[in-house]
Image (tube, rainbow over all chains, first blue to last red):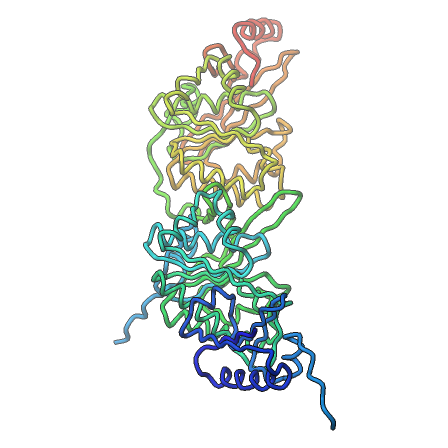
Length: 92
Length: 498
């Protein structure tokens, strides 16, 4: 269960979403769910969910909560961040 | 013709003394940086700024807390009588606690702090806030790794605040060698205030200094301030003598003979009088006589006692025929007991300041100032007393300060320093002569009037203080005769001097 917080369709936000989708497809096929929260539409959630940076990816389960901020370009860091083992490589 | 530049408009803080030292308050629509070490009072200052803004100036405010929770903040100022919860319920105050948990966060790539902006914008719009406090924004630096982004976003934030015409306070921790740990002062160009909290020999001293205030005149001194019952109060140093209108009115000391020694009518209203003498010479009695004389005129009198309790003083004065109870009951005579070692010099000053403002007396006694003087470094004493004397003069309060001289004859340097601030100086001296101990009074100085140069017998009787003849009278006319004469004089109704 992953939640991506964005503030409108900024280049960073779009990049983050694209990167996230790609990473999930690769390593979490079928086991993930991405929810996108646009803070421009729902500003109150910024306070409620304690978000200050944009974009922020939040993995709520399993605990502890993990927050990854940035455009998620660095795949390895993202995986470490959300505590996911990279999927096994097949062949060369 | 060149137009005159408009002076910066200011937002009053409502904090006692601060608006005076800043000549009107903080720069309106701009951001002020308040920096200081932990516990120096930044958060309280920020909260007071908002609370006064709401209660006195009708300006709602937002407090963005990076370190403390809402509960912490409420408790923080509850003792000053501020009910934050009530203001929140009324929709005048908004508190947003921002949590940045470093362990939770991983940074990958580019980001900005738009989330923070959105939160702030939300809070400001919800209540129509005009004032904002960010305490302490440096937490961003310890929570997030990318300093470049943080700095860029801070610049953006201050522009954002300015664009919306919000008067803001940003707090920062004191750094080594620079004002703040992360150099926030670079971004905050308009006004920087430094709070200092020093503890020397278990006495705490708080000081405030305006480091920078672009476009405005400001005092450059360090002003002591106190976190008292009503929150922060800053003590402005007033220019000595410049704004006082000297009164021509003379008031009685309560001892007719003494009035006679000082130009025949007593001291000028608003003057400061030092009464010094060795132990047991009757300084307290003289000062209390002075106060009761004021009460008899229907004036409020305030007695700051650094040594004895109220009951002790009442009892002591009763023995010389001064009944204090009726004046106390009428609300004319006010007591304030102080433990000199419990507060720093500056704190004493601020505390006395507050009490004087509350009681609004016409005459004040500080008995004695000795402990204040000896309990701290000498350099601060003259400055502190100058401020106090100045403050009293401004309010046209006549003040008497007693001081215990350690040696009746030698004029110690401290006494000299102190006496130079005072308008008048009365000396009570213990004199031993032929096995008899007696007390003599003389007026060492009295500005603005002719005064007697005689040394007079100073006697405490059942009916108050009496000044005898010239001390030397009757002492030169032969030893035997003198001895008997003096003895007889002594025997009749003389009480142990206090």
